[in-house]
Amino acid sequence: MKENTKKIGRSSVGFGSFYRKGSHSDLKKRSEIGAVLGGQVWMIRPDKDAKTTHPCLWMESGVVEFKSCNNFYDCTTCKYDEGMRKQSEKGKHPTWQEAMRRKPSLERVCRHTLTRRIAGRACAYNYECSTCDFDQFFEEVWAAKNSSLPYETQSIKGFQVPLESYFHQGHTWARMESGGIIRVGMDDFSLKLLGKADAFDLPLMGKELTQGKVGWGLKRDANLADVLSPVDGVIVEVNSRVREKPLTANQAPYGEGWLFAVRNEDGRSSLKKLMDDTAGLNWMAGEIGKLESMIDSVAGPLAIDGGLIMEDVYGNLPALGWKNLTRTFLKTE
Image (cartoon, rainbow, N blue to C red; front, top):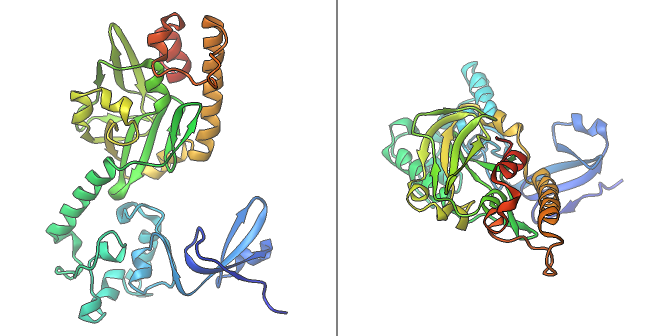
């Protein structure tokens, strides 16, 4: 019987792949990649032309046939990379660097070209990336570029929620980036809730933050709001623009208004304790409903404008109480 397959232009695995419905017994097959979505088993088989959106260096070098990077190209903390290197030490296969050195000179390109983050560039350091000035420079430039990139958001009653980010119940967000860096900020909800800040009391470089503990503060007039850190990590960068112009955080909370960046050798563990964007959207809808009830009890029903809540909730309704708002939504006193 002819296999029921369908060629698609794009899937969560890559381009040019075949997929089919399968059973749980199919998950043991090594010739296909299995995934369970909504209780249904789907089997995906990359064809010879398959390409992944985020190609792993082990795949691009030819050591393995197909592998996507799911660690933001931070090989130093990647469990897959660690496992592959251990196998290389036992002589089971070459490292990706050794595989690249065996290629013809015109194919020995920079690892950043392999991952498609830059156009064609030859490797001049024989894949000894730690000795390459360009590699270090590029990582710094890439991190700076990522920090101000606009991110896709979804609006819920006037509050913007970023996709591809993680959320803490204290209304902060975290986003994993290349090199094990986690960028952190306050969400649109909290900044509209408390209004325009006079200043942010941000942590200093080198300070170690603990997930779920107070990490920084927001000042408005005589009021101070403590904010819980969404992740563990050591501060490696602080946004000087927000320190100089606090309004930047309100104007672009997920772009230029980020607050600081931390480094965590096991950042993915911290992120696992947070909500992803799907759970975050549902949670945010509940938080907005809670705020609407509080406003209703103080000022009566919302205006007939679709229920959009004002840009400065506390500034327009101080009767809600600063401490009441921070205790309810930021989870701090």
